[in-house]
Image 1 (cartoon, one colour):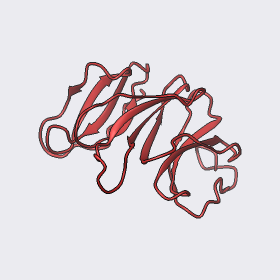
Image 2 (cartoon, helix red, strand yellow):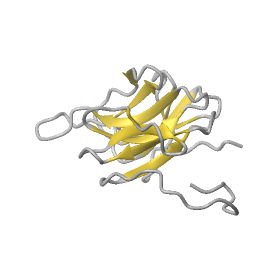
Image 3 (cartoon, helix red, strand yellow):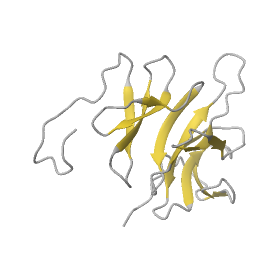
Image 4 (spheres, one colour):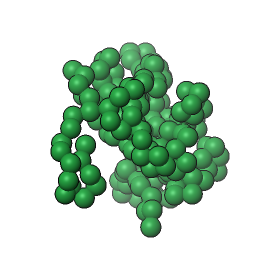
Length: 166
């Protein structure tokens, strides 16, 4: 870690697992937690830890989980998950929402295809994401409860959406 402007502090390694630890997402509400993807147990899973690297907790326990994104209020993580991954498994990747305190999750998308890279609106009411459900990678939006899913882009390849916070 290092301070945001890079002018002070020193580089500090927060994880030491033998597997890759990637895709950090900082809890913008508290600044005290980081969600990340780790391959330390084989397939990628979602983990959280304190911003100093302590208190590492595995949040998903199966499948292939990636792209964590904190809600603006710091209470939820949206992420992409193939719950049943491997030979003969259905293979659909959907967007899920997890309550951090209870570790309870709910599936937000329910279609064939690859749904990935969820990103919260600044007010926490919407989630934008990338989906291949209509053929090709396009940008979609939905309410944070998974309803009112709407395709925003219709041509080309549009990936990895993110909200502007200004």
